[in-house]
Length: 119
Image 1 (cartoon, rainbow, N blue to C red):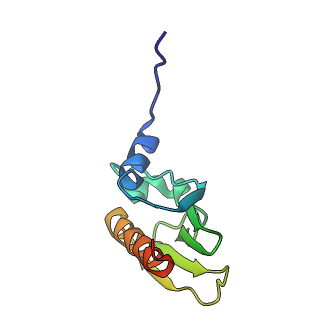
Image 2: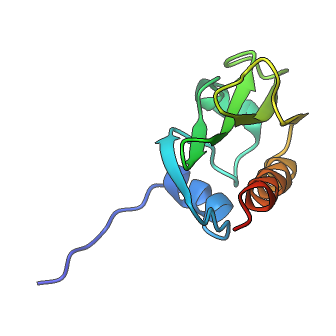
C-alpha cells in the first residue's frame, strides 16, 4: 500500500530554500521557517517571527535566523553566526528583506563554519 503525502504550500516553499544547502556536520535544531517563497512577505506577517531557524555545528557554532521586529512587515531577517554561545560578539551578522539574500547569507555562514572547522 502506497502512502500519499500531503504537502502544503508553506512546506513546499520552505523546502526549496533549504534543500540545496549542505550543512555538512551541522544539525538543524530548530525549524519554524514557514515562509512561502511564492507569496509576498506582506501576506505572511504572522510567520515573521524572531525564532525561525537554527543550525548547530559540533556544539561550537550556531547559525540563527529570525525576523525583527516580530510580525512587523517593515522589519527584516537577521542572520547570526555565533561561536561558543557568545551572542554578544557574533562572528557574522547581516540583515536583509528577501529570501534570496537570506539564502546567500546562510551559505556564507556555512562556508565560514567549514573554514573554521576545516571541514
